[in-house]
Length: 395
Image 1 (cartoon, rainbow, N blue to C red):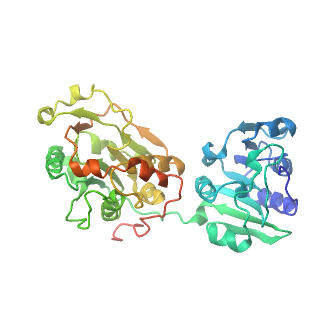
Image 2: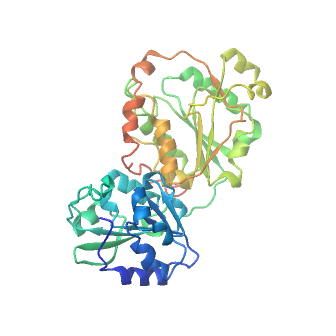
Image 3: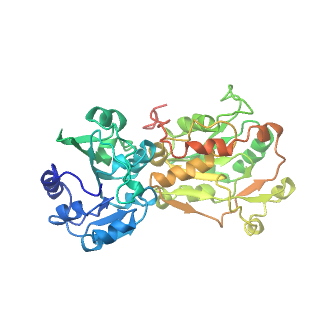
């Protein structure tokens, strides 16, 4: 329903007054009748709201309560832009995966939920249905361990705090001055040889690059049809992250261009996900190394793979590649979607001459193609596969 119990209204208002700066950006998600806008507006003016059901905006005159009201599904809304998110009697309306993903994107949030509350459509609003009717103090503790109880539960209501600092950020580490180059080369020995030749042609900059080439030697259990690409790549990340400030994952069938590692060593790009899309060339053209003309070739619009760089901190924040996938395809798509979900900003560089070697698809590659099957993992929270990689020397 658009209303909620007022059991903790005064306590939450006082907590916000004492713990949230007056110029902080606050977002009320699913405001209903606008209760939290009125309660918190007394101590913190200028709160925004996001409401998925437009009739509520008109009926309850929400634009008179909030600075700005966005009519949008919160699952597609940039909650990460706000310093504090209010989820008042709202989390129970989301599926468990959607709720976990939403919380993961919040910097800080106050969450109020009703316990053991069954609810169907109200006022013709399908979003009023409770998808988590089983909530109790025990269920909240088990299902959402990142949440801390803000006040002792009572009157069938629980109030929780999500704080980014308490969520377990990777600890700060000293800079190493190295970039990691991770090459997934299982089943592609010829392409690996061509790529490494182009790497050694780059000159002195290679002294600042640590290379890990994943082959059948590093991953002997590789099934060439149902290969776990995420697991293979994480083997390389676990080796490189303790030694490097960031790691770039590049498909093996590429020619490494001059200037790439100079770019990735720039301090200004470290907060971002750097993504460079591919351009095709033949093996014969690759021998010419005509970078200037190659840079004018058509960019592959739908290619999410190719070259992906993240700093050590962002790889740890992301949790690495998804190891729940099998077969070929979809792993890059999942990576890009999750980068957006956790709020890492992207820098796409189309002008860079990253050249893709044209080659025939091998039989095992075609047989193991599983892009659609792997994409099912996009909306299911991913475990952190890199928990042990917190500092240099921690291999």
